[in-house]
Length: 304
Image (cartoon, rainbow, N blue to C red; front, side, top):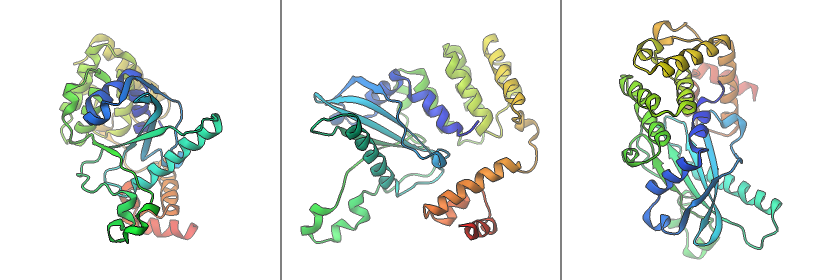
């Protein structure tokens, strides 16, 4: 499966009820007061470049703010570290949203876009820098402040937030808990999430979660889990496992992971590293994200 993080995010947040549940529980009170949550409708647009889907996902929703049409835009980071430059990506994607709007409509005013950033890493995100901060706005003469583009964005740290226990949606609760539990060494909490999801009757989402775990976790074991599932859950677990085997995916890494990285996977990581080098990302971060060594990175730089 290409981009498993992106696929699970889309399987969760493309559900209108999930999106509305999230906004109801996590928006600041003053923002919630002006948004008509029942009007929030998922759109098919995505603004992430194909080469970056390993690290980012996004969802766009049309919504009504105090009687005016607008959008909610969620950008989720699948990185293990904080990216202080995310505000520039948000600006790029918001501009794309407005450009699409100008192409499709002839309205006199563009819709407001409410930007939200999801972060799934273990580290605490300590500094959400705005463009104003990046330009050293507080050290710039006040006469120039009006020439500096600036906006705030809402931020949600999935790994540290405990509000998921208050939400109504089984999908949303499972998604948030799963992102928190995968950072733990013990897989028991992950198995409990899957068991609860199995019993909830969310069959399609249950299969999406199982498929995701096979791809992202090296310690996920179908043998440990299957006897604790319903009959239907066991059948779906084995069906997903057999389907992945037919596609050449290695099942049972917890029981005996094959050594080394496949040539295809290595090529994919090299391609990602090349793209990140072209985007001038810090080399230490590139090595952390891709798993490449400093020597491999030196060779890649010579190909640019």
